[in-house]
Amino acid sequence: MAVILTSLTQVAALGFDDIIDVRAPAEWAEDHIPGALNLPVLDDAERARVGTIYKRESPFRARKVGAALVARNAAAHLEGPLADKPGGWRPLVYCWRGGQRSGSFASILSQIGWRVETVAGGYKTYRSLVVQALYDAPVPSRVIVLDGNTGTAKTELLALMAERGVQVIDLEGLANHRGSLFGARAGGQPSQKGFESRLAMALAALDTARPVVVEAESSRIGSCRMPPRLWRAMVAAPRLAVSAPMAARAAYLARAYADLTADPAELAGVINRLRPMQAAETIDRWLALAATRHFEPLAAELMALHYDPRYTRQRSLTRAQPATVIEAPSLTAAALPAVADELADLVKRLAGS
Image (cartoon, rainbow, N blue to C red):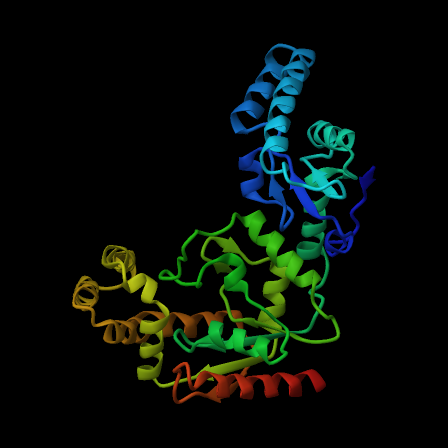
């Protein structure tokens, strides 16, 4: 039996024990239904081989070769990841179009006695719901933007606001990137489709009666592009801006980017990528500060000479709404909860307006 997906929230509500994506690993890596396990019935090389046979020899021979490979791989999954699944296990299986790959695997599982279902239309149906949510439908909740120059602890404050009951979406968390040239995180970024899946599911989970707070971002977070509708909603949204002294911001950045400063070669490489935008003597001075582990002076110069001027220009170009400013004399871990309290109170006031 095939499940017909009509909304992004439907998958979790259906109550399946596991969601199994039987597509090839490269397909799964580009994007998949969040939480889906990858148990490919054809790996990348096998899929390419069957496709070549289909085009150059005959569809019949391709199906015969493919069936043998699917059976072999299904056996490996049954003896491996699925070996301990109980009799009442209930999986949802999908492939690219909801056709032969998911149908073949589901048939094997059902013959064992498991109550297995497939997704009608496969991944393509799911992807169409993501596209509709991000590119066709309006943003479901009123947007409030948490703004502030580099080093004002916006991402950490966003998490603290969530702990206080504020509805938030961490865009940088979804993109696995801190949003600047220095912002790479371990594990790398998802593909554009993967980012859109995460974002669409986060939007689908919102309480539409409440506003959602997001961090101010450019139209790209690393390599991930913001969907135009959300970007326009952010530009037009009311803004809460955190303002802090340069020394406090520099100290915060030195703490927040400890993963980067722990790798001198990586840090030097990122600084060198600024050469097209900064004078050679400035880059050399920054490299010297990095080499001597003077991270707070380095952070202060990067903000004063590079990031603050760029953000000022960006705000003027996007014509963002004027901000309500929250002063934060300190950005230490002990001081941030009080700032988050003030921000949460302001969000409640805006929600009632």
